[in-house]
Image (cartoon, rainbow, N blue to C red; front, side, top):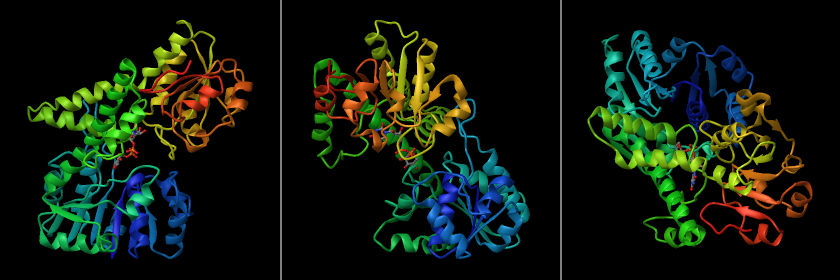
Length: 436
Ligand code: UDX
């Protein structure tokens, strides 16, 4: 099949590449000429494990094309995916201007039947708006489908190739059949394709992400309570997760959720609710607990230094909002660094993958270490903000030799307590006994 993808961000690029991998001819459209030129030359604009290899393979096989010309791509394809940004507006609601602009262009340019597939996370009712926008420009028949994306950053290729489910909101049988054809190679392994109406499909995405944000936040509150009563959240987590109604995943406490999806989607669902006079009380609580959780270790660091952070050198391991990505959107590391700088601390950070993005925001307000150990030279404490695998089993002896104080504030519960303990470290993690 010939498919057009409009928007080559995370979702568009990964969707386009995996659809090409399944044998389709995929035309990726973006307004950013520099990006399109780069992609034509084989430059992948994002970091995502295994993406580059698949991307290059499909360019070479003549199945993956890039253009700034929407009309050219549109004429070649029956199916057009919209993978455009829907950033939160000032009031938290999703900004649909990019989606509706392209919908209008499609309406004005199309010359035969098209299926317009919305992949972006959009508020309930957006399919109707897209439909109205296109219909205002053409009399040619078309269908609008909602097909939310559930991929995780860092596992984007894996999740797209092996989805847990495919959700398709479509009211026309013709569009359902076309979508079933596209996803047949993904679903013939037993993965369900779940058809529903467009509104339910749009809400499924928000409900899934918000539920996971609530799950993490619930666990963060349990962790905080564990510290009050002397329980160990790692044990509680295992005990709870073994009930398969709960499950082990997304029960890891830490310094809050971040990234480009959870914070944005929780906000947007709260906002959509308000427009219908509906209060998502559980999401409002989630948002405020998460905001506190992100910086929960700052007061612990202050306590450790008797309230004085001026001139203290703090090493930060990890800047990305989670491991295996260079994405720093809503990263807890940034909230913490901002406060620590305000309180007069000096920051030396290490993150091999996300450093470049942080430099664009913080510049030389902090310094950057070349490796995890040199970040520790003369440091008064270590703060762990991202769970990169390379931090999992460090050489504690080497760390002790390099640091001024043997003190670790771990926002990701990276070590069993015995490890820092047997090496003489002060160790404060989340929801567990403080090792002194
Ligand atoms: C998420 C959803 O998982 C995905 O389905 C959706 O399409 C987009 O949003 P992503 O933002 O890539 O994906 O990150 P995810 O791996 O879900 O983690 C989100 C945040 O939660 C991260 O900050 C992570 O560190 C945090 N998290 C996750 C926890 O604090 N504890 C956990 O147990 C799991």
